[in-house]
Length: 109
Length: 119
Image (cartoon, rainbow over all chains, first blue to last red; front, top):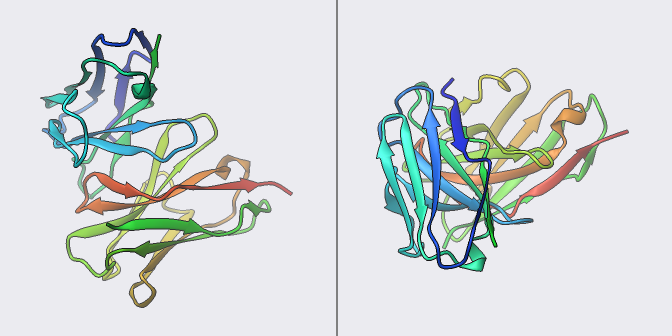
């Protein structure tokens, strides 16, 4: 099983600043990596797939990068509505399977 | 656009079988492009993929749950279902259904349904 490790567990950033969230895979997943945003009481929402492609309707301030085992989600010009838990997910396994990281909780000060 | 909605009992007794159904609207489940998934989230915890199914019936499961779960599909009703047998308190969770692009990312998701295992 590919293990996904996210860091930090919690991040507190001021509005207007930039947040950088990390995700590391225990084995290479190429660019088979997605990011999700989950707000309290809501289902996760797809932000990024293919490591760097924004999903439909996702603001330009969300960007993803990386390949292999190291990935980054960057949120620029933070807004209060960005307060949420962010999860990464790999989908590079065969037979098909996927695993999620434990999440990074982003607080907007 | 495609929407998914989970339905089923919110309370299940220990040792019984948990059964949930996901109804797909705004699109057909009969697509060669997509798989249809179940994911759960224990209270205060992260996301755990349970498994997915293609409308033709091909299934893949999380190896750690494979002995306890099964997923079926009913294309004529545009629905797919999850069965978790011999449940314990550890199976208490919010259960989500979602659509997979191939074997890949999940989008969209249902709103989720809380299932509590308790006598």
